[in-house]
Length: 239
Image (cartoon, rainbow, N blue to C red; front, side, top):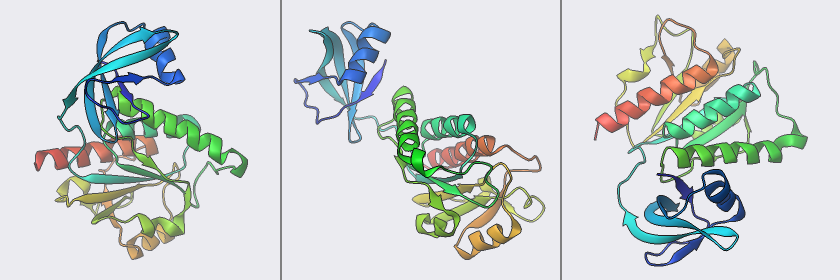
């Protein structure tokens, strides 16, 4: 069953007209015709029957879908800028793994530096990746994506529990899986070059607890998958 995020409120018994991009995907790419689909508007899901209409695509809204697919814990992923293809993969998987908010940031060891003349176009592409990934995995919400921020401002994105993955903390740090999750968590993942010791101290001063992902050194994008997977399992098992 395919899912689309609606641009306007949905009402059972009423028709929803797809926008141009959605109509092309449903009609010309998937060739859907009178098939059951899922529509979502502002966190509320609906089942509908989708069909070609005139030169576009539409759906008759049939009933509400009251099954909730979001994690019971709000997770903010604070992710350093990494190489384009890896960043896009990390964003895609972060959406699939349930992140509620994603905060890109720049630190001293970032290999990638954001170019101001490309900021709006880059953010638009990232938002498209998040929307498509959220639709693919049948989420009720698309993760919020902030503008890219500076390292010194990461304290503004703290939650009830704040964790920072640090590769040199295996012998003395706690594992991410050893925490009981409150209603909100922020997880900080550094760049390919890791954090400097000064940055780790600064994170601690901001209220972030360094945690270990084990004795192996993970790539930045792998750390995203690992961290969010563990947090997701902790959150869902606690229900």
